[in-house]
Image 1 (tube, helix red, strand yellow):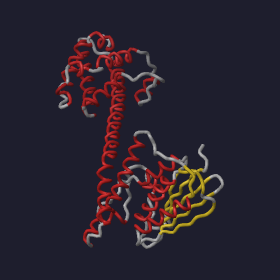
Image 2 (cartoon, one colour):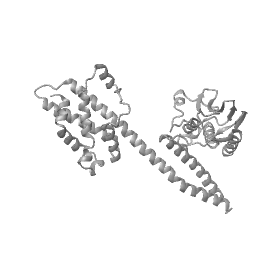
Image 3 (tube, helix red, strand yellow):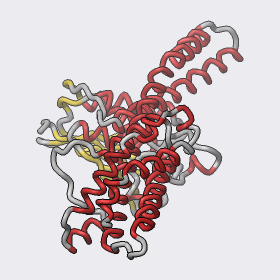
Image 4 (cartoon, one colour):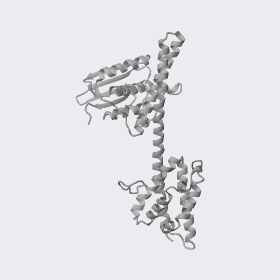
Length: 374
């Protein structure tokens, strides 16, 4: 008997074995009844049977084995994809999802081979069946991963939002303590709270911005008429005060007036300068050059120190990446490794871009900002 015919004829015994195995995947399956355990298994099996019985050239078979199966444009989700979403919502993990397909493959082949005896099973059917199961598994894993990542990003978003209120309370209370003049010890303690609160606020802002990008929302900007001379000069003054042991040089050239989000560009430049301070040689200055041309503005941040190796440079703008620098040698870093990634996203939101180069002479980050949005 051909395999596609067997699957459609004996679908109920196959589903019984699917249900029996799925019920062992605890704790998620502990409270699930038969309909939930079977889920979209009947549709998956019918899709597999249809796949097996559909004529296929050797070239199409080779492409499919390489993961290049044709994708139908504007097609609804497959049964395997819907199954993955429902399993994720029931609390299954990805290993349990894959185990269902492994068990399904084994039970179908075992039942079919027993049915075929004394004749030998059709070898091509077995190959096509394995391809179809692999295709369904790939669809399930892809959708399962997306569902889990979406849920995680929503959780991060809610966490970041809910943490703002208690953090603001800490900041307001510490500022109030600092203003009381209640003695040197209280003033010093309040100052530490203020600094720590500001750092926590920066980390929380980075986390919320990162979460927006992962949810596909991008960095939110509000462009308005700004003079980058004023915007960046104020920022560099703050960074000099916060890093009194480091020299930060600032140079302006050309027309620096335009329509941008000044607060976001301050954040971008701050991330680049803080990165240069952290990883540059401590006895050399960090140099910031801002140049305005007719159609664009260039922001360059340069520092001296050890050259960044090629592999690190290739992924330096990826999220959650941190290099090895002065700040890491003495203890744990207070960075999430999101600064350069968020700087890149801010540049993209302004229809600009950032690139980096590094050699034994210096490391330089260059930001290109067009004056007019495309």
